[in-house]
Length: 433
Figure 1 (cartoon, rainbow, N blue to C red):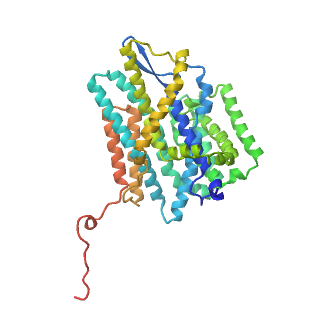
Figure 2 (cartoon, rainbow, N blue to C red):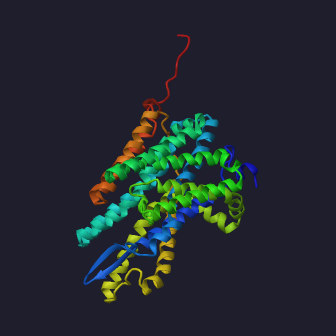
């Protein structure tokens, strides 16, 4: 193995350990969604519900499946490597942002458009509007990740420059801001204040990825890294026992709390310690194939997982109503018996769709603009589209509006073709007359 690739230095093209962990994070999210989504039938009507609400077994499980903190750390790691390679080739920070906008929004257009069309079709078939509205809300909720990750990656060039100038100070300032927001939220009981941490928490975790790529974490002794990780877990457990935080770590996503920073710190310490072993494990042919598949289709898998699960829930309800058989109650014996098959089927169907549609995610923008203001406009248009789906739910109308905004964003990152280049023959300058 190439030493640069194994260490993840700025000159390397890929880090196999980092890619493997990212792929496992995506799989964990798919499993988590599969556990959460369920449907029961009461009387003659299907009920779409979260199967994990009030389930006593769920909070401990979230300590394993809460992978978003390390995902943003890895996003910072991969983004820093990609940006530095781009700059070394003569590219610009705008080129980086344009690439991220295109990679994130293009597959979103396909998914949101498909969901909007299916909702319209189901409405024509007479599916109750209340059920369609609930399905639209369920679909839209995980899209927070698309908006937040897009914003964080758009800010990455500026924050990487800040890291290069004052690494520790920049990270500490973001952490202090996040702690301050949580403290104010606790003192005032105004939960809306917590949403300010959508910026501070996720940007701090992305910033932590810069330390991972530059090597100072790996320079620490294993004992120090183990102690740091253990200390983060101890503080987290202490906060839960004291009643400061809920033991359900997924609940800390809405709004983000500093508990996620502790989770991210512990996960980063573990990744730093296990990185050599993970790099060796990633060389196994089957694991390498899995990692390569997921890495090339990360956003496609994420975006299509919920539509697949909602479709499975709908089919289950239709079959149950047709055959007159009740669906298993969440957390019951029959539910646990059938849940592994449910999860396997959801993974197979999601990955199958990703195999078909994943090439969309890998397309490069045609004639990308190099104007930073147009790239900024594209980011803002994309964020507005996501906000519409989050705040208003996914309906035929909101899906159409979001797709329109995403298309407008992609049009902003395309360079304008001079008229003479696209329609007129090149002018010939006559010399000597």
